[in-house]
Amino acid sequence: MAENNHPKEMEMREAFGRTLVDMGREEARIVVLDADLNTSSKTVLFKKAFPDRFFQIGIAEQNLFGVAAGMALEGYIPFPSTFAAFAARRALDQIAITICYPGLKVLIPGSYVGLPTSRAGASHNCIEDLAIMRSLPNMRVADPGDNADLRAIMRTALEGEGPVYFRVTRLTLPDLFGPDHHFEWGKGVIVHPGKDVTFFGTGMMTSLCMQAADQLANEGIEAEVVHLASIKPIDCDLILDSVSRTGCAVTAENASILGGMGSAVTEVIAENYPVPVRRIGVRDRWVDSGGIDELFTLHHMQPTDIAEAARESIRSKISGRVR
Amino acid sequence: MQLTEEKLHYLEDTAYQIRRLSVEMITYARWGHIGGSLSMADLLAVLYFHTMQVDPARPRWEGRDRFILSKAHGSPGLYATLAVRGYFPIDEVYTYCELGGRLEGHTDMTRTPGLESSGGPLGMGLSVAVGMAIGLRLKETPRARVFCMLGDGESNEGNMWEAAMSAAHYHLDNLIAIVDYNKVMAKGFTWNLMSIEPYADKWRAFGWEVIEVDGHDIPAVADAFHRAHWVSPHGAPVVVIAHTVKGRGIEMAEFNYKWHTQAPDPAIADKILRELAQAYGRPEEGYSRVNEPVGKETFYGGE
Image (cartoon, rainbow over all chains, first blue to last red; front, side, top):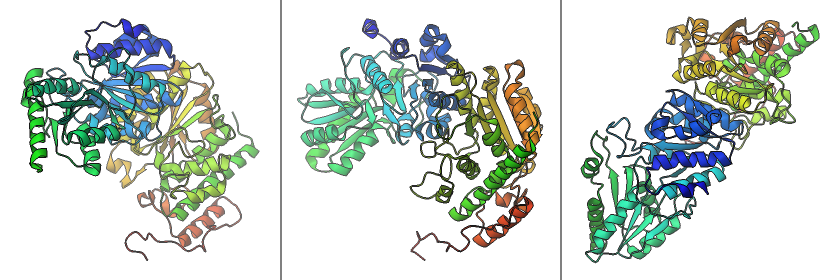
C-alpha cells in the first residue's frame, strides 16, 4: 500500500495530505473543498494530484460546508477543509443542519487544533471543537494519536456512513502504533497496561501520558494508558473495565476540559462507576500566542503535570475523598 | 413560450390547491408559516407542474431537476405542492408537525418523499444548491438543473452572498435561484427591518443574470422560468426575482407580518377558505375539519 511508503518522521498534516491523495486514487468520488488554507492544511497535495476534484470556495466557511452538503447529496464524498476554529465556530450551524441533521457523509478534517498551531493566538487555536462536534447528533468525532491512527481513522470514515469530524495535529508526533494499526469507532486501546491509575488520552496527549507513565514508574506507580481516539462514540466498556481495576483516572486532551473527551469519560464514570478523576486540558481560558512548550507549561499540560494529576487522583482514591 | 388556456387553468387550480392545503395543514397543526407559504404558491405550482422535470414515482431519478427550499419555514407550501404532485397522499398533510410524522416543521429530507435537503436556519440553502450544481456538472448530468427558492428576508444573511459569489465564480448556469420577494419579514416590512434594495443590482454585482417578474402572474412566471432555464448568457447563474405578496390569497393576511407565523382558529380558517374559493371562482368550500375539537397542549398540568 502506498501509505506504507510514507517516511516515519512526518508532520501529521503532511500525513493527512498524503493519505487524502492515496484515498483519492482509489475512490473517485472523493472531492476536497478548501477555504484558502490548502498549503497550511496540506490539502494542496490533493489539489496537485487531482485538480478536477479540488474546489476552492474562498474565505467563506459557511458556504464551504453548505457546498459540501450539496456535493454529498449528489453522491460525492467531500472533505471540506479549514482550521478547526473556523469549522467549529464559524460554520457550526451549516455543519449541524445541512450535514449532520440529514446524516450526510461529509468528512471534516479540523486542522490547527489545540495548543500546537502557530503563534496565532486565541482566534486560531481551537480548543472548543471536541465539545461542539461531540454535541451534534449523527456526528462521529476522533482525535488521532499518531499518523497511523490518522490514516486508519480516515479509512474507516471513508468506508462507513455519515458525517465525521477528525482532528489533524500540526506537529510530528511520536509513533504509538505500527503501520498495521486498526481503528474502530467506539473502541479504545490500552497502549500501556497498569494497575494503579488510568490515563485516558486522546490525540497527541496520549504520547504525553506515556511520558507521564514513565515518570510514575520510577516511583513504583504503575499507570495504565488508554488511548481514546474515538471520542464519539466512546468506549464505555473499556473505560469502566480499566477504572474498575485501577480505581482512579486522569484524562488528557489537547482541548478545553469543558465538554470534550474528559467530559465524555467522566460522564461514563459518574453514571456507572464513580471513582476520582482529574482532567488535563485548557481550563476555561483563551489560548495566548506563545511557543508550544511555553503554552503546555502555562496550561499545566506537560507530562509532569499529568503525572502530578495522577498522584492527586491516587491520593483521592486512597483517602476515599475527592479532594 | 405561451401557456395554453387549458394549462393556465390547470396551473391556477393547482396554486389554489396549494394555498388551500397550506391553510388546512397549518390550521390543523396549530402552527406554521402561512404568509410565506402563500406568497410562493404560484411559483411552486409553475415549478412542479410545468417547469421542472420530476417523477414522483422515482423521487431520486438521476436526471430529475432538483429543488431546494432555502426559506425552509415555508415548508407547508412545499408539502402541499409535493402532496398534490403525488409524492405522498394528500391526507398526510394533516400529520404536519405531528410527532412521528413525515412532515417536520422545517424540512427534513430523510423523512419527506421529494425533499432534496434539510433546512431551517436561513441563508444556507443556496450553498447546498451550489454544491449540487457543481456535483451535477462533475457527473456530467447536463440536463438536470437546480432550482433554489430564497426569501427576501434571508438576503440579510451573509452566507447567502457567499453562495451567490461562488455560483458566479463557478459559472453555474445549471443553477436557477428564485427569490420570493414578498417584502415582509417576521416582524415587519423589509425596508423597516433591514433594507435590501437595490436588490436586483446586488445580484448583478455578484455576477448573476437577473429576471424580474410578477410572482403571481402565472404566464409571466412560466415565461421567466423558461428564459432562465434555456437562456443563460455568459454561463452565468440566473436569479428570478419574483415580486410577490406575503399571505397572497387571504385578504387579512396580505402584507401583514402578523401572519408570518399564524395558525388561524378553525372558524377563521373556514371563513378564509370560503373567501379563497370565491376569489378563485371555485365552488364554496370551507375548512374541512371545522367540527373537530381543537386539542390543547397539556404539558403544564393538563387541561
